[in-house]
Image (cartoon, rainbow, N blue to C red):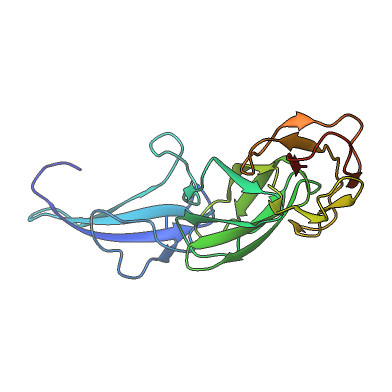
Length: 239
């Protein structure tokens, strides 16, 4: 604006057209700068500047956003960010929870498991954060995708986490029952092994020490029960 020395009044406005020279005034937007507010995505932003100088006729100048002088002509929705771990692991038979956060306006996020045969997922979210609950189905890997949808002023964003389901460890114990005497039957009681449903292979052995955890294998003694054989008097029998 020439000459220098004028004073200025500002009024920012919104319009539907890139060629508009006026539009709907934005309430309170009367400063030289304007922070783009809510609900303006897809609109064009214009400003009317009223210049006043002594001995000069007051004049209005207008401009509207365009791709040449601004990043985009229309107001675009702002980008979100999402914070989510890259990987996690969960033991089969257990569950794992993973938290995430995101920026922008609070919306209802969604979550999907790329391989539902490995794990299923559920989601509880609110207040710009969420918690994923991962339930294993089988051993393997799955890519879980979290999507935060678009809202009034923010774009959609997605991120992924690689879930690895690992083998669980059987627990409990095996107990030998029966009379440890030549010709008598010993039984490997596996009812204490958890969880139920396991299959078993057996190998009976003998040792010199009652605290032994392994010993000399007894040939062909590979069943749930074992009839104490010859030559084992004074030995400890294990399985």
